[in-house]
Figure: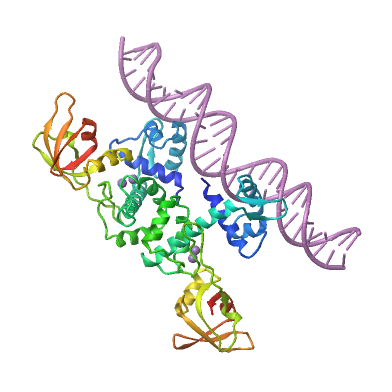
Length: 216
Length: 216
DNA sequence: TAATAAATTTAGACAAGTCTAAATTTCCAT
DNA sequence: ATGGAAATTTAGACTTGTCTAAATTTATTA
Ligand SMILES: [Mn+2]
Ligand SMILES: [Mn+2]
Ligand SMILES: [Mn+2]
Ligand SMILES: [Mn+2]
């Protein structure tokens, strides 16, 4: 139906659309590790196929049909990540690159059966919601730990940075999905935070606090 | 490492090499649904990469490194087919096209863990042997039912024709892998055969008898 | 508001993989 | 042994997706 390159563009536009309404050529080029000129070419093709809205110099947004496709790709990515972690026992920092390939397996029936096989998980190993067969998914209110104050607490429920390095750091500190944390102190000098978690005190930098998401 | 097209060529050369020592351009073109001129181009590229032996007008054969790669692709194809049938409950005639895509997922670690997850199966849903992590696999002596005589028997262990139509026919007749059959009569007029299987008499044409493989 | 900077698009080129048509080589039957 | 026929390769072209460099448009800021 759509080429691998087209699918990757649609997925990237989807992700960027979560924080920008009109996605720019340069944003896409950065995310896709390509050049702005290449993005312009592809964006014209996707617009011809009615998968995105595009006006020269104005950036792009997904059309209804484009979003539908993007959500199916995101669904596949997250279901395969769940499979790799829950069934094949990979660690949460090891699965992204594999899922980047697996998300392009085309059969919808396969994905739906995989979903059923794993009992319809709602979140992937990084806390991101998994769209169901129709593209619907849970949206819980996530906020960075950095936004709460002393004596406030929450449940770790997601990450803003998906890099292997960050995930490995969190794993080592046992700051993983589902863990309860409470802020016990904020160091004024550098805005770092001391958390109570796993019956221990854990000192995290402001940068970590910005990239670790909780639900209250 | 290698492109999708290169992998498909190597796999096709591997399959054709099982019955021909020097695989011809036309054989490859037919199997890959492409044109002889395209095959010549690709074959030059694979020869440059030392994955095949190629002399103009003389056909090709796999080099040691080419065969190693081909066997890894075959391993992935058959393991994914096994997964689709045993874990996701697809029928044996439904899995080939999906496996054609999945065999190109690159991670070796993933395949090895999938293998372990399924308890190291030795044969795929069609009776074809699954190479292990090092590329070694069982070779049992398979022969078409057509080659045995009246009162001889065997165990259905493979198919020569992998088309969905043939597999569906066998399923309906309950002539599936593992079933014991005995030839009770051969009709001289058309060389069709009457089998005893599943406590029933089943009449199969010569063509079916040629494509259904047993081990004695 | 004008000029300068930044973002985006256009122009032209290239690699991979494929195709058709024409040329070449090999095979086979006389 | 030789003249087709069949198989294979070459020549030249096309598509997809990418790139660099130049041109154009939009944004910023003095
Ligand atoms: Mn991921
Ligand atoms: Mn994820
Ligand atoms: Mn198959
Ligand atoms: Mn098979």
